[in-house]
Image (cartoon, rainbow, N blue to C red; front, top):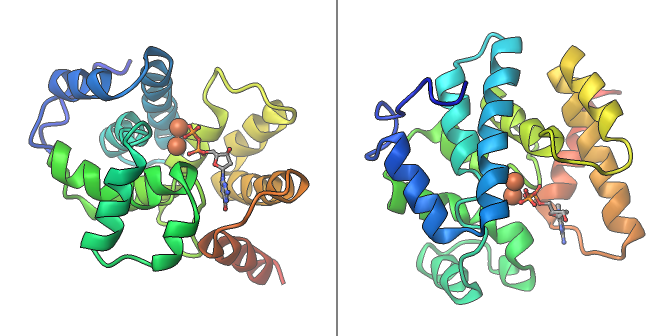
Length: 199
Ligand code: DGI
Ligand code: FE
Ligand code: FE
């Protein structure tokens, strides 16, 4: 299923080379998660009449920066003059919201749809393109996810991608509040946007 593309159309490297880079940068279990998100993204893309090659590649690379050092992220935040408030958060936010720049540089991927999908895969965004929605949901419902409510999330997403996105954004907000975690303001923007759209 997931060996159908070599991804050379969108990357300086082919799928085998990308896989080697992922293996070099990630634990085995995180690497396996990336393969499952690739397959899940392809499945959701087909369900939603979207380009499954773009979806597969974005899914494969979405967590590439997950195990990069804090120092490397801080360096990127300074070098690219990103929001200084990012320094008050950590890897959970950085691996996507900053990590897309590392992916662009190290994997030679320049398609803005893929880069945005990686950027927003953890926190969502107030303005998500279709590929961003597909990766956001593929990461959330890939077959090994087993949080309470995941079956419901799968059912909803299989009948409506947009409803799946709303479900995840609301549930993650509840989870973060219940656990006393800080909410990155761009995540709050994504939540406020879905409230506006439903009024
Ligand atoms: O990288 P994965 O583990 O595959 O999944 P992910 O990128 O969706 O990361 C999920 C984690 O990110 C989860 O523990 C919740 C956390 N998270 C999402 N939004 C926010 C957040 N953490 C903080 N502190 N603030 C947020 O706004
Ligand atoms: Fe992630
Ligand atoms: Fe992930």
